[in-house]
Image 1 (cartoon, helix red, strand yellow):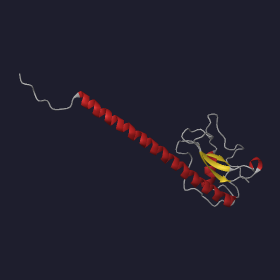
Image 2: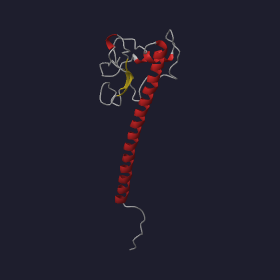
Image 3: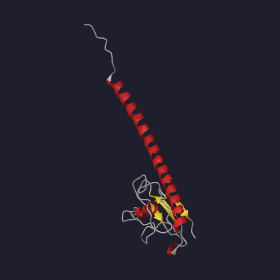
Length: 160
């Protein structure tokens, strides 16, 4: 009886190769996720810098920071997310809202942060109850909840 000379891989060799490929793929995916997270944070920082620059230009022309249209500063909704009155701020920066307005102060709308949440904005503006508090912008960060450890914020105006 003649034994054929078989060419190819054994099942064990194939499983080892597939396992190594799977391991390498998981390492690459983890690295890509970390890079994606860094890119989102960089985008949030850039957006906040752009917004704060626009708000200061608005304040220079109009005399105060754009209003959110409510009495609540840095409000969170029932789910702990920044509320939607943010769109009023963007409207003030992009469309003429009255005397001394010299805008638009933004090249386009920046409604949501990279994680899909509204930006938080505390517009104390050195008036009334907020006259001794800072005015600042914030991104809720990856957890999409305001006033948590992963938030990123920038002070627009220091306390008066």
